[in-house]
Length: 148
View: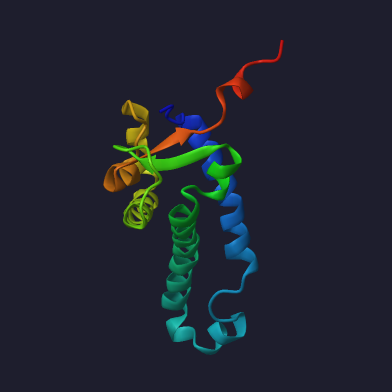
């Protein structure tokens, strides 16, 4: 297996962040501004709740895509796949769920859970270790060679 590099995984995350942003910004979540202003005593708690939901919803949607496709839209665009570390087969729904939980932990720690990728031969982050998965480069090797 050819493990995906940290930089390719970072690019995939950047692509995923674009569609996450679209979901959070353009799909109305939570109460309207008028509803918020009508209950000023709960304004802070309501905003914090919906900010948390707005941050978790895209990660949970990504987890569903991991369970179905074995990859995310960003990883798919870059020909990266998430597989079981031991067998090289597509991860199970249980692994996708554990990986999603690990992703939430990685983001909750301001990205610290991604740092182990830099020091691990299999380039596993905390979320990969929790789920026993690896991200592999699925692009044909001949497509990576420069044209002659």
